[in-house]
Image (cartoon, rainbow over all chains, first blue to last red; front, top):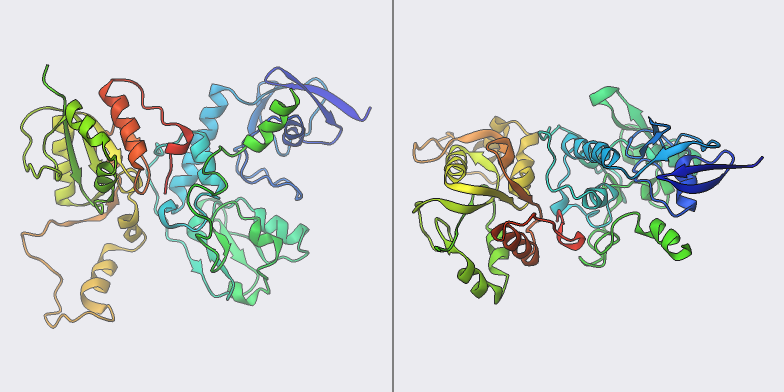
Length: 236
Length: 181
């Protein structure tokens, strides 16, 4: 059998064997909120925003393969609450100044905040000291905004065939390290896919900010995930 | 029945949120029909005249005076609302939170490249409110009932929220009106 059948919130979903829950859900037009997951690279299982209940056990939908007969809960008040907490922790753990960030309007963390209706985090802001690396002529690395999702590291390794960035340190001391003394020494090119893989404004090309006016940016009018949910509405 | 009173204050903010409130255009006529303004920079009333239904706070707390004003708003207002990113998360003033206060003051008054300060002293006039060790969002100082993020929140956002609060309905902003920038 190359197919498996299971349900997400009671909706029957058919998946190819080996597909993860998040991939099968997406093909079926069901949006599982995510941050560190990116199509085309291996899942990281880092952010836990995609946590679903599989037969009532919490699992990361980006790493858990779809299995025959599993009962998945995705959009429930309990899971929405967990995801909201994770997002709020990400907001207070870094220094996220949306008001002047070039990524604002196109930022996946911000867009998830909007989708979940977060008006203020319930946790105290940490205001950590983080290092900005502006040494590269075309790319800026602002660790204040980094959420340690690892999309840049995985993309650099798997798609660019380089290992320009990766994690150093552990726990709350974990940060994004560069393969060299500074970002400028790494050979990272602005055209590398690792740069565009960043969901927030941590790794960004220089001199391209604020090009799109407010109101026309990616997440100004419609919540993140709408494009996936459209598939189901269109097909139903 | 007397009109409900609304008080406003700008703490560590830029007055942009107050500007945005004035930006509701002709709806401001409707607003003065609905409410009476108490202590606020808009009418320049310096003291509370009585109990207020709604207090709108712009800006976070960067000094002693901000904390005192915020606490008096909490005492006098039934519903206290953090308006704008500075009140909600510290905003631009909170950019100093990543640098120790001593370093900030030294840079501003002693060591900065354009500083001319022959006395070599930091400002210490007792008239000046003491700076806090860092800038605090309002809800880390007093209980805040509602948060309206945005830099500033748009006039439509403020209008929607105010109308909901005045009619004692839940503040449920549509997707396009909840913004952090």
